Length: 54
Image (cartoon, rainbow, N blue to C red; front, side, top):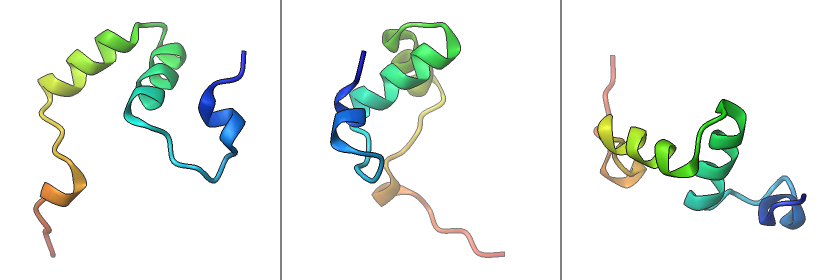
């Protein structure tokens, strides 16, 4: 079964939902479990990320 991301080509970024589906399939979980896990580790959007230089 082709996902929307496969139909749009490899150069198109995955949507949030598509990424959850891909990760769930790869890990044998559900997209909902992936979402709960992401919320639990408090992943911030890239535009809100703190820039750290060493």
